[in-house]
Length: 220
Image (cartoon, rainbow, N blue to C red; front, side, top):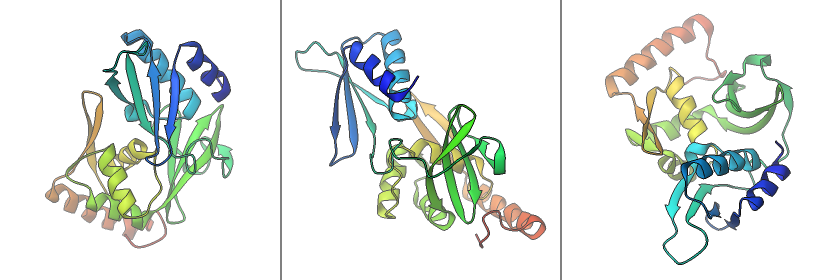
């Protein structure tokens, strides 16, 4: 389903949409608070805006209104999925690794690249220098959610709005970072490795560099 069709279906569901440009938050009001409706609306939002459902927060509507729930998620039109793709490649070409059904990543030329996968192709969406990703990881609390990632990224002047949970997935998978993803209710958290495990990971990573070289072409 294309973005325009998904948006039309959202409106057919009785949804009202508003974008807070100052805070970079998309707000969607829906009239039905059943689980089936919430699941259906979340899938439409994924198709329409290319978001990770884990980034969607659900709030009850407390004023008298035909709408029962308000959904919120971070969205930045300057770096979000409305942006024209930088390039398109085959999904399995050049080391792309799947993060979710629709998102992939790879490390290339000293950068983390995130891409959106569709119809067997990858649209490159975001590039982050690996040294900046290291700083972001080191500054995160031992238990970090998407708001922590967004806050630390802002401190480092990194524009990542809408990609927080994908970055958390990358951090949990890479040996040079390390951690575990857990869900508390609807909140996804990155539990960073203990200091001992981080040092052990770094020691093993240094050994790997001596054998195969640094993955992103620069010292860690």
